[in-house]
Length: 155
Ligand code: CTP
Ligand code: ZN
View 1 (cartoon, rainbow, N blue to C red):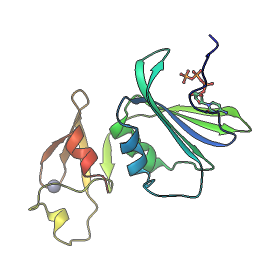
View 2: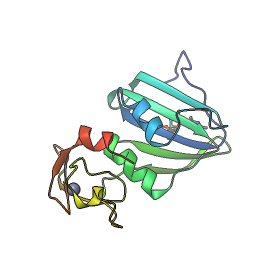
View 3: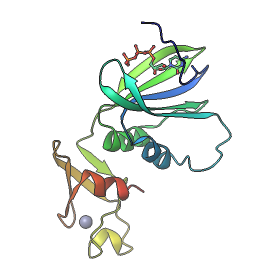
View 4: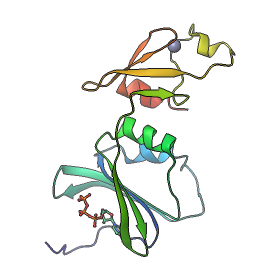
């Protein structure tokens, strides 16, 4: 179906993070460190109609790509997102993000008594113990955290 109004331009090269849950685009930008001018064009569309999933947000970043850690962080915020790699205006790769089984060195444990908060040289480790609702458990202190708290504790 041809769109009558082009809401957000196609990009020449970079990434399109599509099917982000409505309202979460700014969180995605924050975890990618895009809180200021990063020297490339960033477009954000919020609350747009999708053909498949109702309402969604979309983030497009020109000349920027993602590493695995960033993909894991996006999975925490937007478990059903699609990451499209664009080159010469074409989608050259399309990934569905997926929730890893564990998050290593990605989240700060919210328990102040946890050993990972006491200057020890250990990386934080959280194991996914439930996907719906999303619950992660700290390997060190066994604190359980839900999705929203996990997102707030991304480092
Ligand atoms: N896109 C873009 N710039 C391009 C090519 C694509 O911004 N040069 C965007 C499209 O607007 C869309 C996303 O990248 O939001 C994925 O493009 P495409 O695979 O063509 O769209 P769909 O088939 O709708 O994707 P899906 O099946 O993943 O919903
Ligand atoms: Zn802990």
